[in-house]
Image (tube, rainbow, N blue to C red):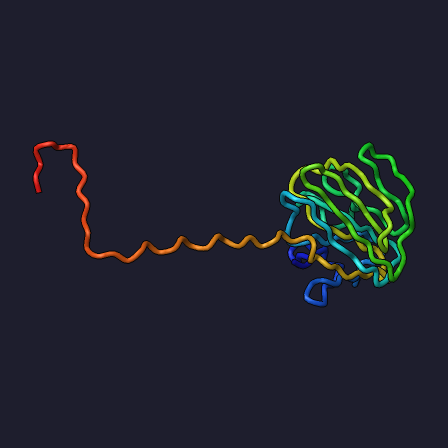
Length: 190
């Protein structure tokens, strides 16, 4: 699992096997990238190490979220995020102030697709937990705005666990050449 090159704003640069994203041009405008795989049926977590920050948003988006110019979290039905400035847009459109995010911190972002619950922790401490009203499949997302903004993702806890198929049934036991004839005809003789 990585960031999705096909869902990456042109002003962003991916590196490190598409795990690191940096703002490369268009400084001052919001630009987003989404992860490749959505959450399916069980809770998921991804982590972001903040390698540099001036104005960054970390959270979730649906496929309907535009990847350029708009604020991640600006439409509660298509995205949700906490910004490095601590701001978070609530489902009703109001903004709340939370802890600031800084270079060197690790942000863990969790989402339960059944309950539609999300939480953000920084270096292991919970800073925000919310019910979301996202509509559709939900992907990890990040928004970068300035040249200083750079982050590396760890998606090892986001991907679905591989389900091993059950082993094949054992072969039937070896036997001689036996035939069984079943009939409902009482006049049949062998």
